Image (cartoon, rainbow, N blue to C red):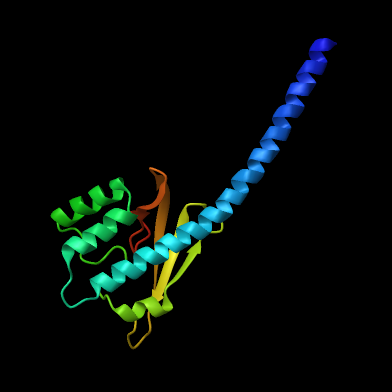
Length: 157
């Protein structure tokens, strides 16, 4: 009898702790979404601003990438660039880079996957083409970083 009460107490205690912890995780997730969107906006603003210059400072561009991307992605992109397998900018899903793209930049979190984000913008061309980039975000050393970029064909690059 005493064992049953102890077991019941233990189960109730774990349930209560789980509920409180779940509530905290949910509120952190909401905060994290806002933080991730802000970081992605900062990244794209810096990246597009630097990349759209007539003289692109490759060192500055690499500093921007290093600040916002995971080590895994940086190494992978370096490998692709060395092998000359990329004929477009994977962060913009385009060969065209114009400062005007920032005017239409939108960032949204996927409704199902917590770490999937969509970055969209319109190309300032005749067709006003909508470009959408899918990104996987991870937490690396306490900071949110871009871990993967999906290619135009829907595969991770």
